[in-house]
Image 1: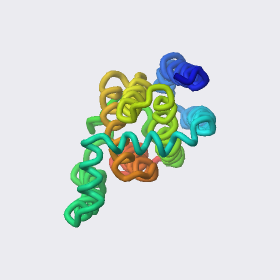
Image 2: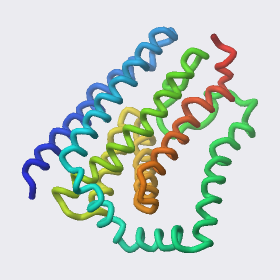
Image 3: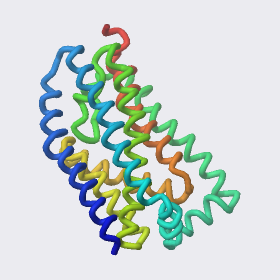
Length: 248
């Protein structure tokens, strides 16, 4: 076992857990009580900066220390039978390639269709997977921050939990599938501020994002899907149902 990588893992996990349990939960409770757009924008700006510094910075440090292990961890996880079979089907067969295209179309439909069907409903009445209601932009001026949070989450969280952290875990316990599974569970646990429904949803999404990365072999696929999922909640929902564009 590489003691240097173990020490780095302890530092990374400690910082992430501390941020989720102590800081994010307390700050989010305060944020939920805010009504003034200017105050909400100020907090959102800080979150954007912190996302880049915390997730981006930690990911950069981890990848700097483990870069040579990135392709090794990926290849090891791709040898796991379910992933190997998925890759053989989706990448090497005509039917599989067609289904990939169909999957992207269905994703787009699933993200947009509910809003078209419920366009006369109120945004607060739409069921949400987790305690994310306070995050939704409430005015036109908050929309860019919602988009920014969606983009930063997709890029920095996927870089951390689907690329950097599994590689670091693999350097300590050389088992690719296990490394990605642990990273996905930690990803879900860090959504504690969204309550248990949010934790469960984030964990399941983490597994899906890891699957997309392992099958496709590129981190860009889960990044794009993650961004689209978050844009649905943080931009499309308030824009179409919340009518925030009419609320300066």
